[in-house]
Image (cartoon, rainbow, N blue to C red; front, top):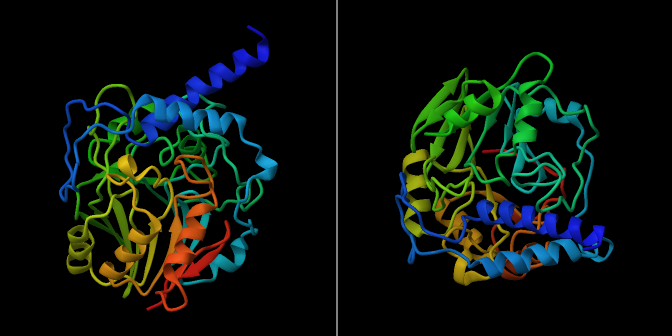
Length: 343
């Protein structure tokens, strides 16, 4: 077999592993945790292996120069530091939050690929909106769940070695052992609805309709969810990965308080036959914003890695079409875009 085909085959295999584990896999195995708001069909088998092979082939053969992607703007970190409470989108689901003088990083995937093998797997399609070494020292890292496109080993290792010492890692229950094994650090575990305060900040781990799985065994052995960050009277909500269940978003509104800004996933929603159980589509994301009573929202989980059948830019187009001229304040940001959390 010629060398280029060897490389392509290895890339395909690694891509399949990363995508299969990142999207919930294709086989049902014994669970430890279960969704509190199960959607129709929850617990059924996910996408078949042939789907992941098709997605991997598209990734490997993609013409990057011809792929439509969102713009990227550089982050003004000094300006961001002067804002009382603001969120910058770094691509995919990674967000940098400045709140009350604290730097918070959510679901850091800062490497060129996501997957279990370094240098292989779904490839980053858009660059980070800052130069190497510009990221400020992070105080707190929030992890929504253990899929490779939300918890990247290379990224958290980099953060653990940052100047001034590692950040505090806040994770779902059961995920602390992974941090101890891979980083030699203690991560602080949360149950759903549990809140921890740091000065004038409050962090609450909230339910989501999703799953966890980082290896071929042990599905749902760590808890998945979203995060609410409250700073004085302002609240920012990040949903993590989630399917649409109306009662879930209504309960978050009722139990965790009104939402001033929401970061809601809008990508990796095709084909709906399989994705609907764990990923909202743009129309459902708008409905979630309305159920939450969120004054503003912006889309995450799109355009950065090829994880669904839709083209990387399609979530933005579908969202704009669904909103129409009279829709709620649901924004499509450039990568590097910043939104204030205002009451």
